[in-house]
Length: 417
Image 1 (tube, rainbow, N blue to C red):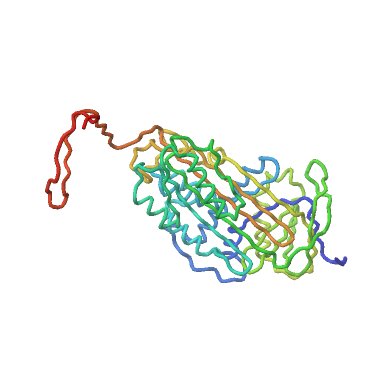
Image 2: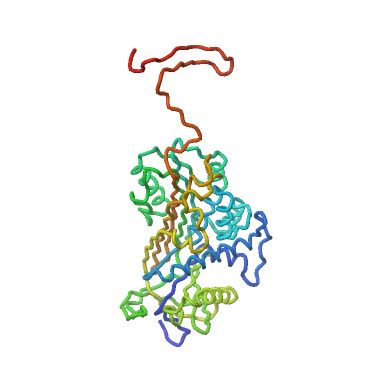
């Protein structure tokens, strides 16, 4: 490509892929556009909800900065899964979840539906954005009909039941469901070791995104990429044009790359020194996104960046506890009484598993994330009543409406005839 143009050579890339969230924040906040009317979800406006979701995103991402290596995560996906859990919680457990999620007693069902309503969900043209939820519930366990109805009605969740002891079938069914909804990007969200005989519920949320660039890249060959500890050769790609937004701060450069047929875009933020990013990541990203929203494309820009594929999987319990979600993980303390006919402390969350995958090349991007919340009782069996017929009994077969008894008898020895 010709020289003499504004050039951005991406050598130390810190990728911030805010797939759905960026689309929402731009929809609500973009300078010069008319904001949508305020929609109240309980006491929380839609604009306020977007701010809370993005705050949760930065909080969780900040905790993963020390994880080492490449990271891709969808806090939006984790947020949706936790919102389904929130609907089944009560008392102080609900308060903790609500505080971490920024719901503040708002209507989680309506909040989710309104959030989804402003995202470009669907498949049209060259872009697909898909959000799916599901719940796998143990047969015979006393789940509340109201909770099951809210999972299916509010969250559009598919409710399936699994038989006690058939854990291989449970894991296989969950993984197959997730794989189908992520176009095969996530094939094994759960492993057999993630579940045992005491599992009574698995809540699942999935987000899938695929799109092509507004203007496709071309192969560039190899570049030297500085990892912070040395240089490595990586395959890169390039694009030029006036469709890119470029903004600079005192210690970073940021580029917005639009996709075709959608308001969703990728923002690449390259700090001057990624090794010290943790102290300033929140301020840096908020400033970069704000400048991107205010900027307009126009400068003829040459962008060179690596192709990359990342798969990241993590058990999030430790991180969520750092965000203030603690009680729901404690047996004997957690309150999930809005989910099932149980006493406070009988049910708790054993694990929260999250996996995300992203593939970026010359044509575009494909990304997916899935979160599984695994719920157990403190002991099994767990029933409100238990009756064991182990001595002689009388049996009656009758019509409940007319009260007519059709058969009557007794059993003294069930092994006899």
